[in-house]
Length: 196
Image 1 (spheres, rainbow, N blue to C red):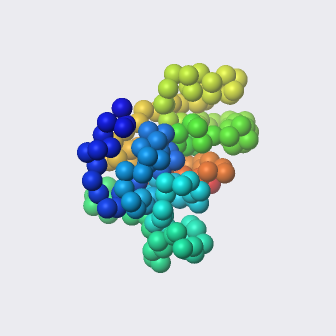
Image 2: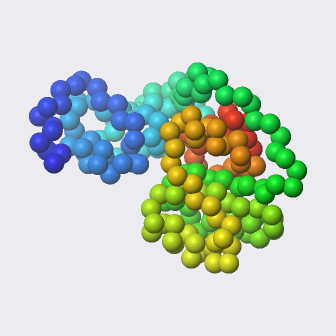
Image 3: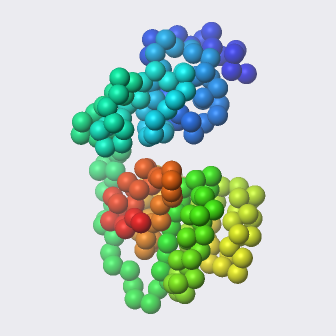
């Protein structure tokens, strides 16, 4: 239970890395365990909740504001350069063309998923690789895909290095709208992929 851990938290500044992407963290932060609470990385859009005092951001993501701690060169950091992974090579001819989105299914709007299915219809020798999160979401997506469901491939969540290696097999990474990916887009671009 969250109230039982609050007396054990003693800090002057709390930095939240998940923001609205985690109900448990939002619930904890709403109890104000720290006098100053800052959001970083988890949700790069304006936050209008009373428990976030500041957001670490940059001028490309959010406009200047008294509640934004803006990093001029970009707020997003990653550890990709520490990996020694060979650059992707050109795909072999006549292989299946793969579209990929390894984001959480709760980012898929009906319009976005319909667009992806329309792309599959227009590209007969293609598949769509998606992240396998739960049996219910997998079933729902297959039902929505109808006859195209056999061209949906569900991939498991992997640690970072195998995930980056797996991205090499993707022809095009499809982003979501209106809530876009940021980590997955950086991963795909770092591997030399194309993001649409």
